[in-house]
Figure 1 (cartoon, rainbow, N blue to C red):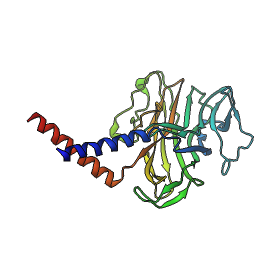
Figure 2: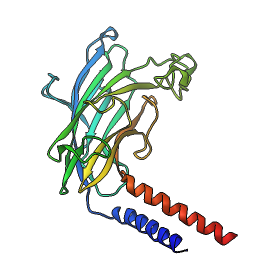
Figure 3: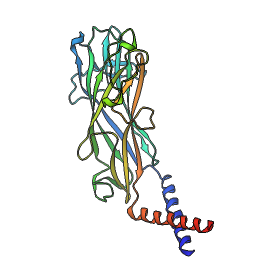
Figure 4: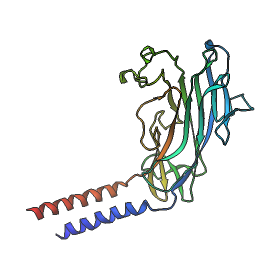
Length: 293
């Protein structure tokens, strides 16, 4: 009985420590930076009209003065003509991560999908170069690996990445039955997309991360903060909460949709903590069974 009581105290103590840690002050702050730095267009469709744009406070898009691309990044792209445009617009955020296992938005891509004239060129591909800059009042930074106490980049460093977008502006037809058959995801086995009101547009995305991070979403970055191990998971979401499990994103004709890059910080339990917690739960289980007997 003394053994069971000790295990119960250990277990409850561990659980209380985990719960109280969620009430800590800000673990770290993240600032997303970057934007569009390259695009290509389908010149076979007619007049070249794609341009880099900036978003004004009232939401309108205006052409950037510097259209060179390359080292210069831009908030968005617009294509079309005669006053009717479709566009992709990037917004960057700077959240404070003050709760564990909670999703925070670090950037958002909005696709405004409007019926443009076929005489104007369409956007085909685009690249977004960006970085996540970390800061914190705590000690530590990015660790050499999960469970490692070696900090390879402290809180004055940033992580650069690049999102590549392959965009498809589809031909609209008189009936959705005559839209081009396209799989719902990059994976052809996902089945054909079901068009809603017209031949919806889509874009495929991929990620080019620096080594050793994987070139896929979601991915996790190991952190060592104030002597504890954490994992910062980066993922893509349609609703700002749940991750998506596909690489092709759709927007209905004459509508807009927004897709978010999210992060969530989780504590990585120490091996000895997992062992004690397992022993405690096992002991409590024995005690319950003894009472039933």
